[in-house]
Length: 285
Image (tube, rainbow, N blue to C red; front, side):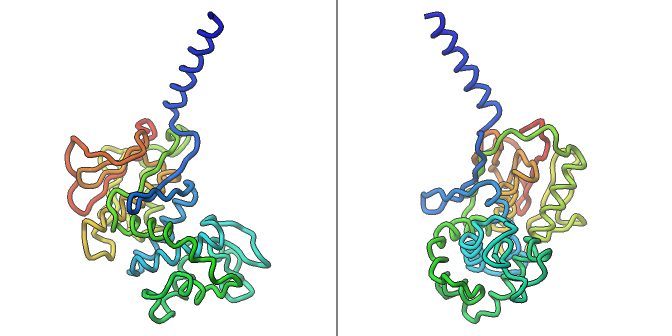
């Protein structure tokens, strides 16, 4: 009985320690019509990039859906350095087919931009089936394969473009103590959001005076609705939290925290309309 008691106590301690550390497997979800569509943390941050490039170009959510479905089929939405023949990167573009140099194609920003360069040349792509629009750009040997990813891609595109408020959540381990802190963490966040969404540090992104947060003016995005713009930026911040170290994202009267992994109504001050506040202090996560 004593041995059982000791074992049970040890089990409780182990479970509690696991809770304190957060989930052991990082994952993110986009909710659409009551269904959660999961990505790994790596897939989520790449989805944020693919959608972010569409937003900064002023493209519709449909373009992001097509881009995400294409990358899911080609690379599982992971920036891989191998593929069929000389195919590389998120979209498995081939240097020998004029997509760019290997170094350019392995740059996910360049690769995503190259895909959209081709997509916008497809007349009427907004009204096409995903598989038809994707195939017009990719010229794949398996043209029907893109269709299987449409619903998952649409869920993430809808959320990341701000059309589905509160739809992106991430379950992440506790923020590491070995990452950047203070001004360095704020600068790292600003650099990443500038890369993905094109929001510059001069006006749209600024460090908060508390030294642990970043304030984002989402109205600088080419989006015609400030509430949707704010949710687009907020969902981007959650989807990229695994790489930026964000531990809390606030928009309006809602907040996502790394500790909870979900969105909750806040009791504190409401974030001004069109703005997002992201905390990047590892001691809080």
